[in-house]
Structure formats: structure tokens, C-alpha cells
Length: 419
Ligand code: EPU
Image (cartoon, rainbow, N blue to C red; front, side, top):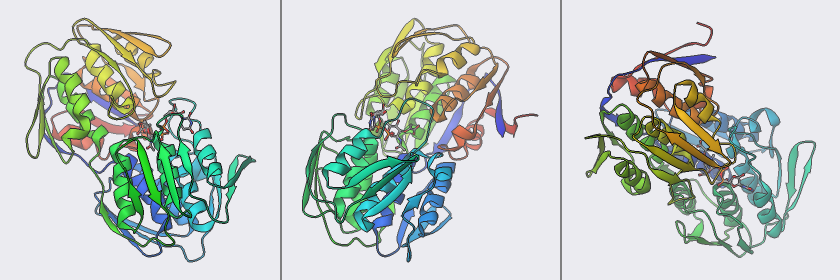
């Protein structure tokens, strides 16, 4: 395993191109199982999760090649309707395969999914929706086992606007009989991207991006070509890296309207964030001040940028209050920030951040993907050397993280963890 070694104190300056969205492409890959001819997906980031999801598809029997940011996926001739434990435990999005397999083949056996260490990550809502659509579902020996002759169009309403549940049920509805209406769905841009992908395959979906989805099931879906939307979380991470180091960073390849609330919070803290036709540029003209923020489903502040925002607030003037409403264990990073000299306390799902004059480099551990990104940002501004361990979490979601940061002037190296 590797670690990052960061020499802090360097102002970042320059431009960086944002890649395709991790949390979109993984769901497009799951949906491609439904196609009866090849799919081509472009603007795909070269990250570990894409490789794991490729193995999930290959295990089912699909053909998958990935080169130059393009995935080519061909249908399975003799499908194996299973996701084994050694793959499912490595990736949360494996659960999305459940909807695809059930709706296309009427059968699925998927090991209970894994993913980040950020909370309990239930799948009860996924299961409830699929059962309402007529599937027989049970858990046996750690596997979700489902069957349905044909899923039935139904009227569903989610208790909470869960991203994964919305995607799984949207996929399942595409080849169900008749019309499915799903209320109180998530409105994340990645769901809109998934709906556009499936529409390109011949699916019939209305309401994507609103809180009600209306899906008319079809008998077959064909392959399609699609460009993945830019990764709004990667975009926010580089803007925050610029702000944390009081630098000047311009990003391209991401849609500004998808990170409106992030830019607003950064401005409230004292950053200047300017949007032009092809770039978003951050600078910090004066002091950074503490703010209050709460993570919420889109269009609220994304939980996936909460740790990177903590890195900015760690050295802000005054006290910040951060409330985490999506995951019950996403403040594990606070203890790691405190190793860097931050002054952060948590109480239930709130963090109180008293800004300190400066951080000091230390060894820290990336407890999950976004925590890892937040700690790297902390290391960029800390005095001396910061070592970030367990960076395999960061590799799940950031393409060439250290190269992109180094191109902005950061002093960051990847070395073996025991070096
Ligand atoms: N939940 C339930 N029951 C369910 C489903 C969800 O209680 O059946 C709860 C979860 O336990 C959690 C909350 O609902 O507390 C939100 O979960 P959601 O289903 O919305 O999230 P997800 O689909 O598991 C995706 C992203 C996450 C991102 C969240 C929220 C993927 C692969 N993951 O997770 O991304 O934080 O939506 O936006 O798309 C990341 O990229 O670092 C990451 C964790």
C-alpha cells in the first residue's frame, strides 16, 4: 500500500481539467446490463471503482474494455446472474446491479454491498421498492437473492430521497410491465445523467431531476453512446484546494450550476469564485471566515465535500458549525484533522470548528475517500511534512490526484507506506 507525502505551505496556482463523475459512470455501467447491443461510455475517469465495476460486469459475462477514457461494453451471451462477495464488498454501487439483473433476466444473487466506512449504509429502501414491484427478495448467507417473472409497474414513494434507491428503482422500472411512478426521489445530477443514458437506450423516462419519476417500461433496450457529466465533487475538491492554500485555481470540465451551493458557501467564507463560459476560478482576496453549513440531498451542500470544507474552515477566522445529515459516521475525519493541529469537536451529527492560525504536518489516515481528500488539502497548508496513509480510498474516486495537484504546484509524492 502507498501513502502520500506532502510538504505543505505552497500556494496552488494554475488550471486543472475535471474528469467524468464517478457516481454517474458506475450507475451507467450497471444500466448497460439491460442493453442487448454494445454501449460506449466516454469521459470515464481512470479510478479504482471503475475497474472494480468492470470486474462486476465481466463476472456477469459482459465484455468490457477501457482505454483512453472510453468504456466499451458488450452484452453477455450466457449471463451469470451473480455478484460475488469479493467484488460486492469493495463497491457500494454493486447493489445497482440488482435492479438491472432483475428487470432484464428476472433473477439476481448479489452479495451484500460494501463501500466507504462512513455509516451504516442500509439497503432496506432498495429492497422495499423492488418487492413492491413484485420481486421476491430475501437475504441468505450474506447474499441478496431476488426473483421476478416480470417486474410490475407500481406507484412507489421513498421515505428519504436516497440516491442509490432512486437509481436502482429507476433502472428496475425501465423494463417492468406498464408505468412506474416513484415519488420523493433524489434529484442529483448523476440521476439526470443516468436517465439520459437510459433514454438513449430506448427507455421512456419523465421527470428526471425533479422529485417524481415516471417510467414506462419497454420490452427491450439497445446499446447507446454517452458522455459522462463532469464530476462535481472533484470540481469542488480542486476549488477548495485553491482556497485552502490561498492560491488561484481554475477548473474546466464541470458544470457550475451543479455546485452552486458550494460556490455560495465559499463566497460566504470570503473566497472569490468566478464563473465564465468554460472555467470556474477561485481566489482568496482577504481573510477566510468561519461559516455554518449543513449537508443535505441535492441541491443542498453535498456530504461528499464536507471533509474538504473542514480543511478550509480549520484555519478560518472564528468558529464554524457543520451539520452532517446524510451519513452517521462521516466525522471520523475530525480526529485526523486534530492530529494536524486543528481544533474540532463533534457532538452527535454536528462539528464545531474553532479556526486555528495554522496546521502542522503529521501522519494521518484516510478513513474513507472524501476524508482522504480533505486530509490531503489539510496537508497542503500545514507546516512541514504530512503523510496520508490508506490512500487506496482516495484512488477509488480521484483520477491522478497527486499529478493534478502537483501540476498546480503542490509538493506531493506517492511512496510505499513503509518507506
Ligand atoms: N439509506 C437507508 N436505506 C436505504 C438506502 C439509503 O437508510 O435503503 C440511508 C443511508 O444509510 C444513508 C442515506 O440514506 O445514511 C443516504 O444514502 P444514499 O442512498 O442517498 O447514498 P448512496 O447511494 O449509498 C451515493 C454516493 C455517495 C454519496 C451519497 C449521497 C455512489 C456510489 N455513492 O451513496 O458517494 O455520498 O450518494 O450523495 O453513488 C462518495 O462518492 O464518496 C460517496 C460516498
